[in-house]
Length: 128
Image 1 (cartoon, rainbow, N blue to C red):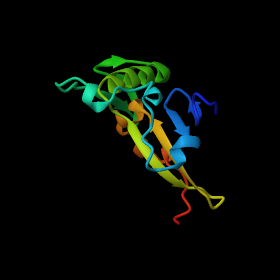
Image 2 (cartoon, helix red, strand yellow):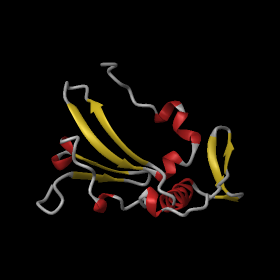
Image 3 (cartoon, rainbow, N blue to C red):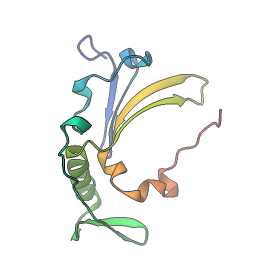
Image 4 (cartoon, rainbow, N blue to C red):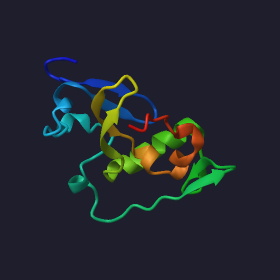
């Protein structure tokens, strides 16, 4: 966290997330500089963008008929989804250690594909 960016950031191939700092107050909207992987819905195209994700044995393997490596597939879906404002999520987590934390996540690729229902993508929750 810095004075210019009063929140923490975690980025990997699938997503970028922000938490802490100014986001702990749920009345604060995420700042525009957090949206590095997606445009605001009001800035998205007025016409839909259609994509087709191909699967083999339950794993995504292609986008619009083009077979891609996993890393390239994620990058392509992040680009396509991000251009359309896909994958913007604000959450409040109930952490295992007994605290709640608000996060703001961008993951266009994860929301552009149904693979998030696979067991490996599920997180254990406390149920509280």
